[in-house]
Picture 1 (tube, protein in one colour):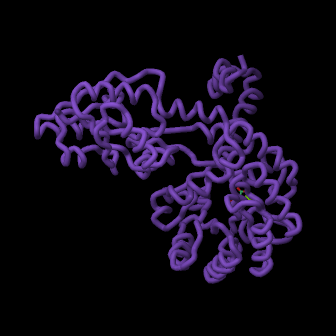
Picture 2 (cartoon, rainbow, N blue to C red; picture 1 turned 180 degrees about the vertical axis):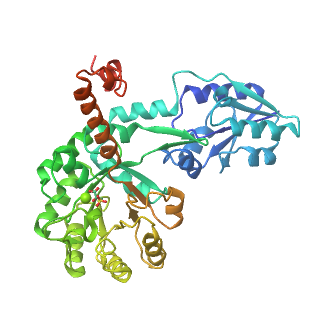
Picture 3 (cartoon, rainbow, N blue to C red; picture 1 turned 90 degrees about the vertical axis):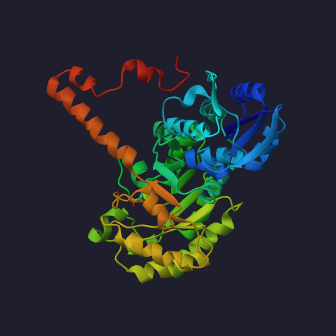
Length: 432
Ligand code: SPV
Ligand code: MG
């Protein structure tokens, strides 16, 4: 029998996969190169089914004689090993980001006279489409809550973007780009105190109360499935904080981040320009402990945000606080900095990595925005939060439109910067 090689992720099996495997079967014994969980994470997201589960499914498909592990997107290392007579693939890789892998395969199999057979792509079904359909079905609070921890312990970086209403939640949920053969998207949402307050026309001073914040959170929960991290400001009084933890956990929020400040909270990006007071290490540790005791499951994460660098209390203070908060049982540390050169973040990370019982590390690179995700991951950072970028980009666009209407005494000029009426009408499905 001839050997036929088919590479796939097979995360959700659909008729497109069966079509490719059926065509492969006609040519000989089918060997499936099954992508490892890391490969799937590398080009997209956490697989829904783990490698062993996917392997069991594929092994039981008629015509498949063997499943081998494929630990790179590139098939060539396995092909050199197996030297199949045929490689079978969908014809969707002739153009686009997967083309480089196709070229490599053609080059490699030439050596032993192997042939590439391309099967017509099954229109209307794809894993990303099925994924969207699954998202439309929705998610339970428990499943959503757990998903952040699962991501943090399996993927680097976990990429989070600010959302302050249902629409921005949908943007975070759905926006995807394809780059170098990888699908990039955000892993979850940050409900920023700054953006939530700004969207309500209020200052970021813990003025917008929990009930009002919960309205925003609920709007986002209703139309999305990705994990949510809530900016909990200082967490307030310990006696109040325990209730906040219970409420958020019950709703299916994945984490709350509280900052070690006390008194009237001002936004950290003001730094020392305004009066801001750091909480004592001991009192804040008590708050963390109380929050931990209040939650029902350990799936809900309580993350401690250190303000020592913002308030110029020094690197030693920041590191000592990290150790104390870890001791108090925090599930993660967020280190904040408003320096543009990123140097203090680099230094903090180096020292933080030496802490033996360290927990996942979160950053908000608003000021040191020149640093790329790879660089931050290299420093040991697990979660990157883009904390305010949707509202900051929307506001100037809206002001320009308002000004244009005033200046021109009509909306014609402004319309070129607006989305077409047809698009706004159909943006949210179900309106017709
Ligand atoms: C927020 O987004 O509200 C934050 C992050 O707390 S920062 O504005 O940088 O302090
Ligand atoms: Mg905030």
